[in-house]
Structure formats: C-alpha cells, structure tokens
Amino acid sequence: MSVRQKVYILLFILLTVSSFSTRFWRLGFWSFSGDELATKVEMKSLLSKSFFEYKNIYDALPRAVPLGYLWNSLFITRKYSEEFTYRLGPAIAGTLAVPIIFLMASRLSGITFGLLLSLSLIVSRWHILFAQYSRFYSLAFLLCSISLLSFCLAFKEDSWKWGLLAGITAGLSSLTHTVSSLVFMLEMVGITAVFVRKINIKRKWLVAFLIPAFLLVGLESFLFTYFCGFGWNKGATWGYTPIHLLLGIASDAGWPIMCFAFLGIIVTFFYNKRDMIKYIFVIWFFLIIILSIIATKLIVFRQDYIFPISLPFYALSVFAVCEIGNFLESNKKTKIAMALYLTFLSLPLPSLASYYQDGQRFNWRQAAQILENNVTSTEIVYATAPGNLKYYLKTDMKILPFKSLNELKQNCKIYNARCWVVVNYGRSGLSNNLRKWLDINGNRLAHIVKKRFDYYQFVIDIYFLKRNL
Image (tube, rainbow, N blue to C red; front, side, top):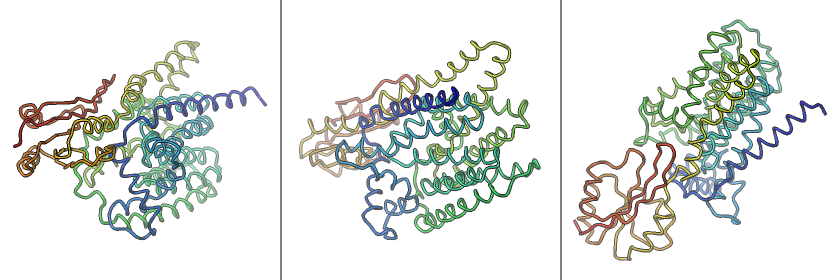
C-alpha cells in the first residue's frame, strides 16, 4: 500500500468519525418540531395502509415521495427516545455524506478540494440541522450529491459506470424529495452546455446515465401526479418572497460559503473558462437560484427545499479557496495558504456553536412541563402551535389554536374560563398589537429561550390572562 493510499484511508476514517460525532451529538435532545411530528403520521400511514389508499395530505405525500420515509423506518426502535429514534435515518445519511463526498470530490479535482469540501460540510449548520431532523432532506442531499459528482466524473473519465451511478441516484433522489427531481434537470443542462461548447461525449456513459434516470424520474412524476396533483400545499401561508428566499439561502448555507461561491464564479469566468467541470458547477449555481425565484411565484416555497441540491454552493466556494491556495503555494507561500484554508473552515464555527445551543428548535418539552405544573382541568390554553404542546403533555388539557389577536379575543369571550396563552416566535418577534395586548391583560409566567452567537432566536412565552375577556 502506497503512502498516498494510507493518507486517503486515514483521512476517510477521521472524516467519518468527525461527521458521526457532529451529527449524533445531542441527536435526541431537541424537542420535535412541527414537520417532524408530521413525519411520524406520514410514516405510519405509508407502512400501515395499502399503497394506493389515501384520504388526505398525510396519506398522499409519503406515497408521492416514499423513499425517505422507507429509509427512516429502517431505524425505528423502542430502545431509545422517539426523538433519537426518528432522527437516526437522517443522521446516518448525513454521516455517510461527508466521507463519500470526500472520496468522489478528491477523485474529481484533487485531495485538497475533496478535503476542504468535506470539512466545510462537517461544520455546516445547514447540513447538521437536516442530519438531525426527522424528514427526508438528509437522504436527498446524499443522493443528489452523489449524482452530481458521479455525473462530473462520468464526463471527466468517459466512464459508463459513473454515468450509471449518476442516473440511478438522480432517479432515487427524485423519489426522496420532489424538488430533488431538479438534479436531473441540472444534469441535462450540463449535457447541453457540453454540446454547446462542441465537446465530444461518448454515447456509452450518456446512455448509462439517461436510461435509469428517465425510468426513475418518470416513476416519480407518475406518483406525484397521482397522489399530489391536486396541489398539496395550496393555500399555505408559509412561503417566502424572492428576496426573503435569497437571504434565507445565504443565511442557511452560510454567508462565507455564498461569498466564496461568488468568488469561485468570478475565478471560473476569468481564469478557468476551459475547465468544463467548474463551468458546469457555475451553471448549476445560477440555475438553482433562478428556478428558486421562479418557484416562489408559482407555489409556496422556502429555502429548505433546495437544500438537497445545494452542493454547487459549497463546491464553488471550495474551488475559489483552492485556486487562491494553489496560487500562494506556487509562489512558495505555503503558510499563508494554510492560514487561508483554516480561516475558511473557521468562519462557520460561530453559527455551528449557535445551533448546538438550541438545536434551532423551540423547547416544547419545557413549555409542556410548565403548563402541567400550573394549569388546572377547568382552564383553557390557547397556543400558536397546539400540536407540539399536545405531543409533550402527559395529562389531558384543553388546548385551542389561534392565529391572530382578533381570533384570540373572540375565543376568550366564547369560553367562560380562566385562560393561558402560549406563543412561539423567532427573531422578528410577536406583532406589536399582540405583544401589547398580552402585556396589558396577562402576566408572563415563562420566557423560554437560549441565547445564541448568531441572530437566530427561538422563543416560547407563556402568559396567564388576568381576567376573562
């Protein structure tokens, strides 16, 4: 075994251990969020009912994109807490993504590129969040990343094996998450870009890529049309505007990553025009942004949905760092190059530390405990997220939802009982009218929040109303 092979094996082991540690640390500690509770209901529907039997969105969605639910179901066990158990599948997929991407990226563009790319994922708050989130995003990211890197390797090496892997994983990713179907579109645009530049492509790997991709994406198109053709999120109000979406992407992927990615685009256009691999990644970057903006105009959309296809953001940022580092090393400034690499990897650390303070979730477990210790059977609780509270309450309690101050006032008049109000909000805070009304008419019993290094905030306030209204 050569020294180079030993280095690869050592790095592979170290990256796997680091990835495992960051994905599994405090995995079962965080309270379930709303979407995670929905995953439980959807998974139960998929596993307990006939496949073509559905009545509502909780039946339809897991049948339209079944692979993520089936993957998560493989790791369900009663040995641990439900929070830990239901997040095992995403955590394992997130752990595997790092060493696999290291091997493939190193083969594609050198060991420095592969190492920096995998390390940037290890310290990525976005990647860790979805690796600890009971949904299908983590597996979708793994499959999409394998597909994109395999596609580039198939083009670079004229290998039908890489082409076949790219096609299979592109199809499987579409069966995991609907927006992941875009990975096939990205690759088709990549093929078009190659033809536009009049670069010859061997038919063998192209056919090996297209056949499984068309079959599996076609299957997903049928399933989604059959089960969700009615518009599963029609009427929802949690979609983002284009500006909000772009800011969300930059914030979640990390401002350093996005800034270096734009630098990578500049470097590619001015210094690496003939490098087709980097050129394809630039095309993918802009295509993802453009399609995301268009999506906000057509459907209810947010930045979470493009996480599975976010690899080009990280890849372009690492391309830029590697180019600068190579330039410094060629001028015998190795120490400065190493300092650049370390600085690049250290920039996301404050955001990562912030994530581990509260898991980027509301502490519904603590809120439920406070209510159990104070609310009597004759009192009513009004909550902005009643489902989360009900899950963690061990005693029966009347919990009613409300979405606005007017709705809360009306409910208080209808029900002649002593009232509690539980509100959750982020950095933007409560509306001024609701906050003012609660401060005047109630006493705040609890303010549940963890201070973070970044500007995110996940707050739960519990009020006891002074009088019936």
